[in-house]
Image (cartoon, rainbow, N blue to C red):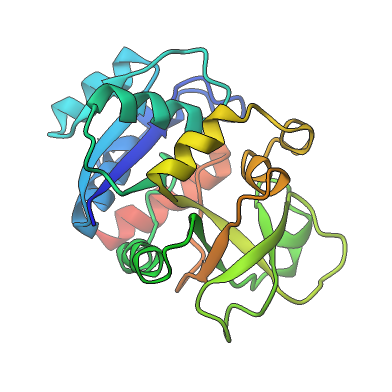
Length: 244
């Protein structure tokens, strides 16, 4: 099995502009994420970015990056362009690791990859237990509802993804910013165009469910903070600078 890890990134995030190049311990967030992906040691890693500043930063820090069109509506469309540009025909799996997840656990990345190989699933992702009940109402924290409990099933199906869950139902977890695709599934996904639910809720994973592409979910060991707001950035900065 040959795997590529692709990290979509752009400077024009609405909630926190310039986010990928914000620095922690003197290194940009995007370069921290790149290093995480390299340390997971499951395949070659590239950043897929629409901004030359991101490309320059990643390369300056010893990484690989490819410039993409600025017209993409989603990160998945962006990584598909990079897959085409790399032009390797022997790739089986693509990991799409979000560029704002510098605290993603390396063992969790490996676990998702292994589950995809073992089960031959079309598309897989990770989710974590929600320990703070306030997060059910926090729309920056995406939730996934699964068919069975993740504690009991290694890689169960996702039923739905949502930004808010008004009631605390069972089998609702914090969805993490990582996907693993079979190459053919990725090609199929980007050929479909955005679904109504995807546009309405601003969640591209709903395009898969709306088109009967199964998404399997594995339980992550912890629930890392993604960088969506200035408060998130300050919290992550504090954690990472304390660790170092």
